Amino acid sequence: MTRKKGVIGFFVHHRVAGNLVMLVMLLGGALGLMRMNIQFFPTFALDVVSVRVVWSGASAEDVERGITDPLEQRLRSVDGLKKMTSTSAQGVASISLEFHEGTDPIQAVDDVRQQVDEFNNLPADAEEPQVTRVERYEPVARLLLYGDVERSELRHLAHRFEDELLDRGIDRINLRGMPEQQISIEVPVERLESLGLSLEQVADRVAALSRDLPAGMMAQEDATRELRSVEQRRSPQAFETVPVLSGERIRLKLGDVAIIRQEARDNQTVMTNEGMPAIELQLQRSETGNSLAAARVLETWLADTRPALPPTIKLEVYDETWQLLEDRISLLVSNGLSGLVLVIGLLYLFLPGRVAAWVAVGIPTAFLAAMGVLWLVGGSINMISLFALIMALGVIVDDAIVVGEDADAHARMGEPSIYAAEGAAKRMVWPVLASSLTTVAAFMPLLVVGG
Image 1 (tube, rainbow, N blue to C red):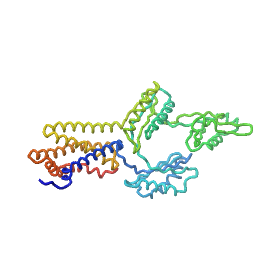
Image 2: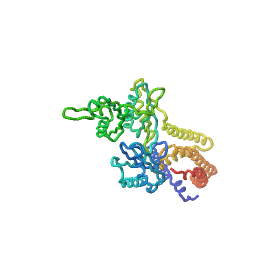
Image 3: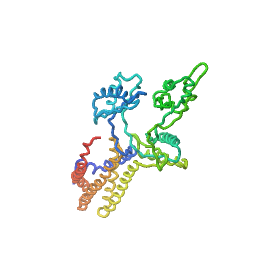
Image 4: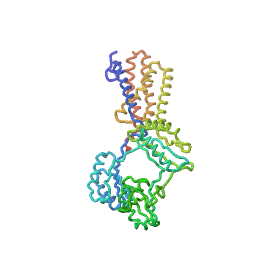
């Protein structure tokens, strides 16, 4: 019998070439598996650009008239713009621009920045606009810090834990349950009259040295003045040093004439657990972060931190989204191993040992080859790709059994093994391809889904 031509015939009659290709598939897949990112969802870009302008001390109405409305008029002409939303609040204007899918994000940021830079009618006291591309962060887990202590102590611990986790490699942490703080400055009327000062003079003096950030309210019975801070005066001790009266014979500081304290703003939402003050830390990873690596960082940190906590303070972990990913990976591995054992056991009952062994070898070979290709195209191990691999597991086994059984049947009829294998591969290539394409066709509608 003569040798047959074609790709299948070449690899059948050149065993070294076939084994070499399989070795490359195994090594390439192992390399990709070690280097690929592990995350909950596939990486996708958010086509959103944010513009933020701070105008200290301005009311929401002034911000809308002086900043938001004029900027919106200019930004409507940006190419690729799909939707624009804006918010005008006291002292700040925020504009969010969503672009059509496929828009170059770098070009979109440049176009928005150009329009903002060309806007020359910003109020004189407004700060330079900040134009940034909105980045996507994915949740890893949530920590709940609570205990029978003052909320200020919890606040201190939460900030300390935040710094520790960031230093260890967590990409981002959001804190919830901490009401905004303000500096309250109360000046007795008698003290002002004895010094010949008015509340407005004291407020103007403080405002002249403290700008940029809300710093609280100054009150004199029924009179109040809002203050802001830029020189990082964020504690009562810092405000006590502000000079309010200077002369040749007298020098008075704010701490000499006023009662200064730090307190929570009114109408703030607070968090409690079991009737005790609580603060939540939301741990997140960036687009390039590894969910399982972040989970390992969290577990190590918890093991180091929990034993050192006072008995009155507790630290709980919940909403561990990384656990879902780990469970899916465990499902894939367990299904693969159980499938491998079942295939080997059943095939050894009905087929020769060599055929059963090569069918079993095809499972890890195909999976590692897929991992290598996924890594080369910039993919990741996530819930979607793991679902696809689990779906493909049964297809791989079925196809290998069909080809192996056909080759064994022809070998039993007296055909040489090498030609039986070649003939089985050539006879089954189109039926196997057609059956695989039916599975692919079932998921084709996903190609028209955006994102």
